[in-house]
Length: 158
Image (cartoon, rainbow, N blue to C red):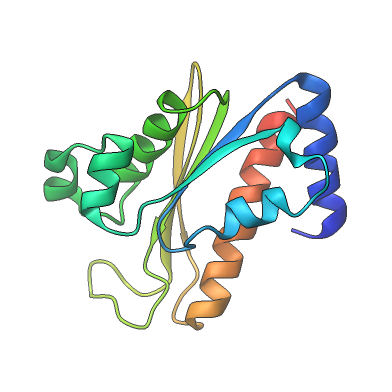
């Protein structure tokens, strides 16, 4: 997401009076950093949660242990619960979450480069998965950050 997109996100969120929160795992705060890079971002960014471990997802966001056991941390189900948890633990109206395998590593069932996202509003939750492939940790993290920011931009543009 280029600077012009970030400015558009800030303008639209402020114009609509919308606050944003994020819950991040594999990006480790990159979405929060991108959202707060702009002057005036306090008018649209409430808080960010970096929940790298399963315990953090449970403690800080209320992700259900049963969901983690059944689907694993890298799943749309967990991404949904992360976004809903962030929304419920903030004053935001839009929450985005990211959980994935940036690499190196992965498995046959959860390959490197798989990242799950969710976007939650007060009345809707959407989850999706992107497969970036084994293109390197840095690239996967930046691509995931940009995709999450794009989801938020889409939500504030409606």
